[in-house]
Length: 311
Image (cartoon, rainbow, N blue to C red; front, side):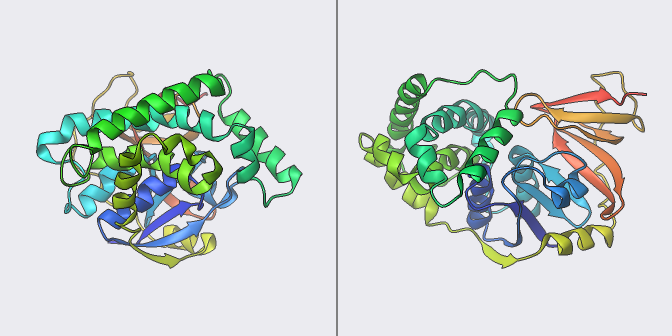
């Protein structure tokens, strides 16, 4: 199998989710640091349009969205398990809640003026403005929580998490699962990226102890890698054979059609290509780039919209 290449940047909370999973599974991976805002020409050469962080590359296969990346890492390294058999349903449902409801409440709290000042303290004003404009464009049409409402919700969510980890070391027992990593990363941002905001944890010390246990898992074995080398890897590789999964047609779009896929809400940039697979859990597109060659770009079904390409 080709090396695991993670396209990410250090302060990305969703990238921290995957870095922590890589640590949990003690995997070796190559680290490509990407810009935190557009343009991202090297990343888009691989994805065809998708620009959210992180993206996992395995040769000429490109995996978008951390929910799918977790599934891929579980397939590559089944032990220790992210989805224990007795928790398969509840862990996924909890992770989806954490990646959405918990995440957005935490970020509305984290990026109040005091938190934003810390985040951008080392950057010139123009860079801070560019980041704000970039995220505004990515969240166009989304309803944003007011900081006061987000703070109240975040406190409630932290109390509920505390109740879970007061009972045992991790959310659902003695070992972590996908739910732990999904709940951890927005809290990590509060504690490690905007630490002036971490007083919100004062009432829930058990949450900090749980976070320490996850942090102790590390981030796996990391090797620095360049974006140019990652593109060279893709250009020199053949996409892996697709699994013989059943085609699940919910849209009346035949395999082999030119289609577009985009996220439902945040970061709705379109990726266009030939629809190779539409299984119960994922979509796969084939596309060709002048630099990266022919790649397969994979998306989870949940959270993404499939349409026929115009024309």
